[in-house]
Length: 210
Picture 1 (cartoon, helix red, strand yellow):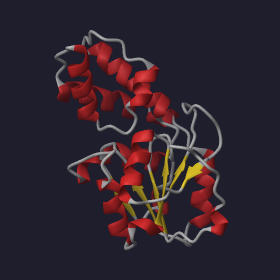
Picture 2: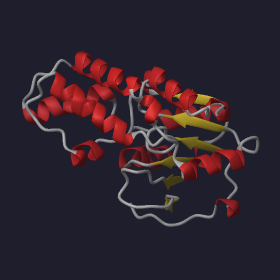
Picture 3: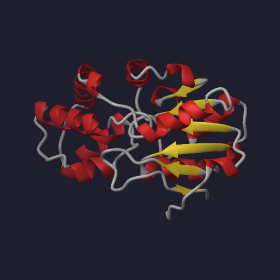
């Protein structure tokens, strides 16, 4: 998927949909530390590298453990690892900062366009993140892993967010940092922008409109 630049002022989108982790909040380093701690705490037989973490960005929590168990022949208890990971994350969430470029967009378009969050994390964690960063008031709706049967790269989260906002998928612009999230946007028939945060392999906000 090639990225090209976009000037938002020249497009006529009717709604914006934002991923949360790595897009609104610069949480990816903390998510990685949380996974490493949870895997080590539960005696995982495999090292969880940063490269492996980034390649799985956007996959649901339970699916992440399930995939790694299958790949490495491990037998980690999925619910225990996920619970430990989420607990560590929430205990350290006060250290998280927002993604500056995204915050500028939220402030510029607040009150002009309806906006939603569509995140592969669970609702309690997403809402806690938004509360800590004082960003809840920017969004008309929040769609999370809890709300759909299929997580990213399935398009379900983005389609549900568009439905709740009352707009066609093609009229909604998605802001994402991960390849799986971008694949979900493409499958939903939505234009998208890739957002870069501290664990991204570049800077700026390049875009692909499908």
